[in-house]
Image (cartoon, rainbow, N blue to C red; front, side):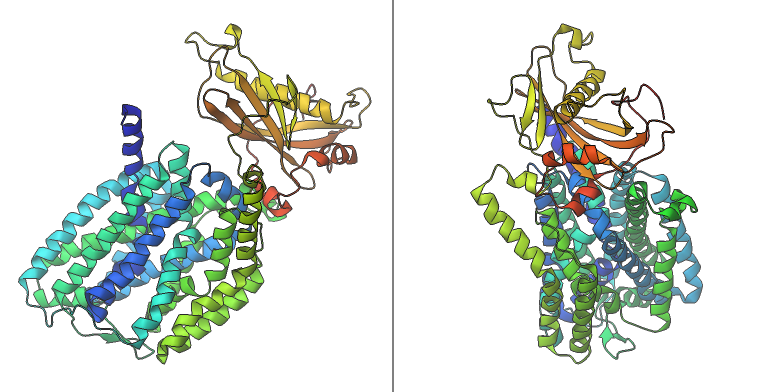
Length: 611
């Protein structure tokens, strides 16, 4: 392994602690205790293994060569913002509920809730102030402290005699019925968790290996679940506490063991471990939710943004308050945490399956209303089966929820069959740019190669800087040259002296990947990525014949009249000239989501006069 590969691997593995901790919300932390005490060690295995497998598969799929998680998320987030926010709300409410109902209240009573509020505020402040890169380093330190505290608590609990040993297996009808919902919920869970979308985007952007990061992160997460199971086994079975539905639960087993032991040092150690697990979820929630909402509001043209500051709309504070209110209501009603867990295996299944299918290249088939109605029916079937108990009803509940995703699944498999017949065009049909060198029969200097307009260049000494690399500003110049030639090829009769509209650059961005040198053949590719009523987004890529992808980006264009510079709808002349070159098999609703306006301006076709 070369030094560069070793450095890349180490950067990737540095993400493992935050991947594992951010997935250790209330479901994983306290439910691991419950299944160990209630169903034994094999029950813990049945819970933990699918949970870790879902985390690993999410990273493995999105980390495949040729996949860019940022572009995939940008293409789907507009349709699935509601799903992503609902899942964050449920996960956060579950975390707050578990911390309060199964630890603080049993140990200290209602007076300890002020401590929970303080922890939530501090964790939210951390998520507000820190970037995802900072959280990665912070969670690395959290992991060391948290695991150390958990091991200290385990050492102390081992000194006490548990009331009854945890069995190898003690299954009942409810356990068997929960197997399929757990499997489906855990395998799909990361796809609807914006925290993990933010992480795969960040890992990919910095050039790390998403697969390596999530492989180790999943193993680490599995180890944390086993650690909590071991704490439960050391604490003993305790006394199950029935919830309002009459079903006994054992999430408080460790808290009961600590109360019996009566050692404040051991109690403090477990509190530190639980606080770190909760804080690493809350700060991740805040950082990721603000990241998502900022992206959505930046692209939104809603008139509400004219009255409300974008920062207020993008703030996760409202979701934090709502999650705390839900948790408080659940505690007051003595409801089981199962009622916050079941949406992930029922209500959200159809929508999450649609999201996963689109991420894998399927054409959109998401109907939010249909998914909600079928998901609600699935949740009702689950509840009946859980309370009865009726294992058959529990088992079919997630399958009912998946019915809403059948069109998306059909599109996915149909797309794969089409991809087998024409593999070269399949990635473009999915909206995922590919590292493709233009055909040799493309026009010698510039011309169309499918939906792409291609400009061939050969950098010389005057394109380089003092170090010998191509000067960074030349990449922008090359894209501008390719765009002007693209315009000229599509509208050869366009004349600034007679036109009644100007085409202006609204924004421009470019992500650098590698540097080129003189006499290294360069290909600049540009195409129409999306459009709506007023704006057109052009995507561009710069490739080297020897190095591959050098960089990619996009620019947003707008249209104004030539007299008062008032914004116009896309002129008919532009529509008729450019639409034949739009990728027709890229669905319009995906194409619109690709646009992400940014600040700044760059000289455009008619930018002799500034707006």
